[in-house]
Image 1 (cartoon, protein in one colour):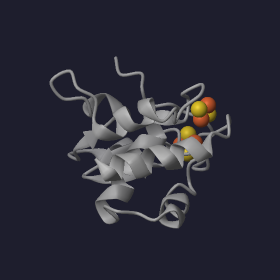
Image 2: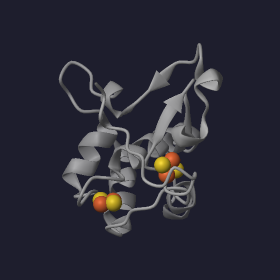
Image 3: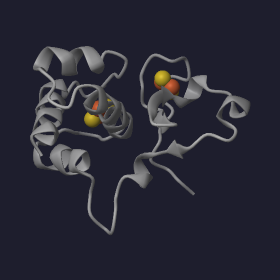
Length: 121
Ligand code: FES
Ligand code: FES
């Protein structure tokens, strides 16, 4: 059973449920199973390769980009999409890209720092 993807609001507001669908970040609470049928879905569990964290996961770890961790899988999946579109994002681009993801612990400063560090990697 995969437990990384969280349901926070179930109303498309928090981003905790974000996964990659065909390479694009989507809020999975807003996707019907029939819409996802035949699609390639990647959850946070799919990022680690050969026992090594993905650079984004490592950067969140190294930069204390999480507190309780509830929002973290969604933040990381959104950041994956963001870095695909903006490999060297400015702070403003990161903050804009994360607008659909809420952190109830309000650790935004270090989340932004972690994404910048991942972009450096
Ligand atoms: S659970 Fe909050 S956006 Fe999907
Ligand atoms: S780390 Fe707790 S909700 Fe973001």
